[in-house]
Length: 143
View 1 (cartoon, rainbow, N blue to C red):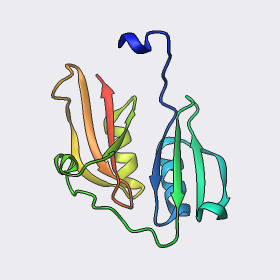
View 2: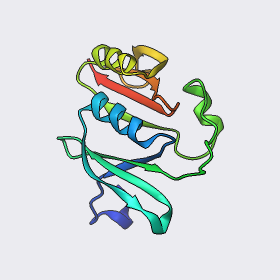
View 3: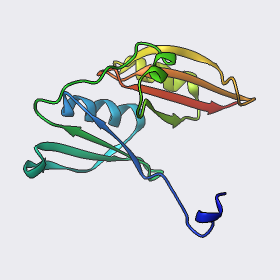
View 4: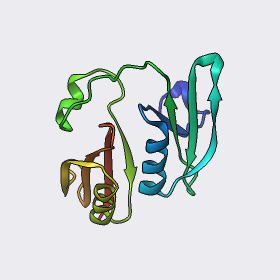
């Protein structure tokens, strides 16, 4: 732990994804990860619509839609994500990697790296998929 932050507590609250089709992405992520819409609305002063999705374990995913937004380059493979600066993917720990992978595929995700052993963590496995708009989603599981 860094000495400067020894008395502070940090907990990741959410990740945000800008979407071309907000309604479709809300449906995908709610169905894929058993999320519920916690907040949804228009923010005309910022020229976007937004939704905050919540998991029963209290993690969140925030989705945005701004008219006229341009897509950023999204790689077709997990390794290519490191060729572009910035946040490259979200990762969700799952209890059954194969079942979660199959579930996301059935909901319209594309496989980018099938389930395999995690190279740096003994006993862990991982997989990469792309959501319907191409954003990378990593799944990890222990065992």
